[in-house]
Length: 365
Image 1 (cartoon, rainbow, N blue to C red):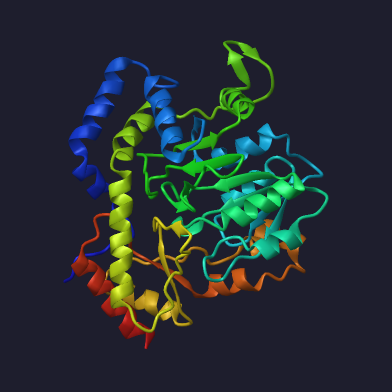
Image 2 (tube, one colour; image 1 turned 45 degrees about the horizontal axis):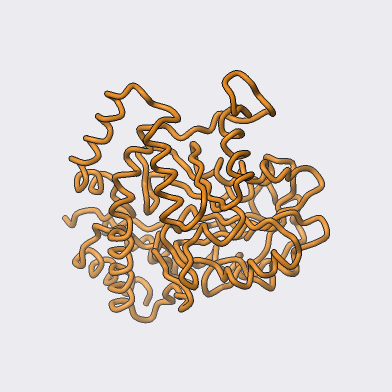
């Protein structure tokens, strides 16, 4: 029987870096500093330098990384925030938790990223901010989107949960907007051993506000200037992430090599588009096919994982459907019916890719 092929393999990544990760974890445990200590501070400096932002603020998840910037700018009832309809639920959820209204915009069918035309159509006098998602590891058209936001005085928030290391016109994801929001969930390109997140910004006031919000609204012990959250990045996660950050560029390059082999081996399948203005880091390798379900079933029969990101666009989710009955976002709806993400991770070997491709082509017909 063929060995199973998972979507990602965090355990294999740990085995590869075991000595360094174990040493980092032991260092933290021996120090007795487990929250808001030197590991987290060092990771913040390293992520800021890597992204090209002046500041980085650790928090406890990618969802909080999206939510806290909206709180920091004062988004609330009566405000609207434009978000793409084809993305993970947390992007809109972060808006709703402030009392503001997420306004769903359609995507570019080639890249799956926010369409500039849809953004223009969705923005109103009530629009306070835009959250642009760099989906599957590829940056959106940031020059055009950033210019539009500047022209309208809108706060630009980048959801970079899947795109650490991705570039657009030589600038990395997280350095274009007012805020860059990162997730280090265990399946991400830079993966923690649990939940963790980070926010980048080049505005000193934003940096100070975010640090206060993540720590119960406090800058001074037992003095709370506002109601905040407990959203601190713990030292163990920071230490693990610092080890893996040193390997991120190599891991992303390996993902690109896997993607290239898929491109060489797959025929008659709609492959993910690459914007020549940027650098894709392939958090996912997402094909499209009208026979998506048959392909997924054929892969499963050979113990090969595949996933649908995402089967229901946000404006059709039960939490938002009632308020969006009249919304028609055809590119997002078509993507939800046809996308299929194939296994991709830095340690996936050529033989496994070839086996996956053979099954995909046979099922695609």
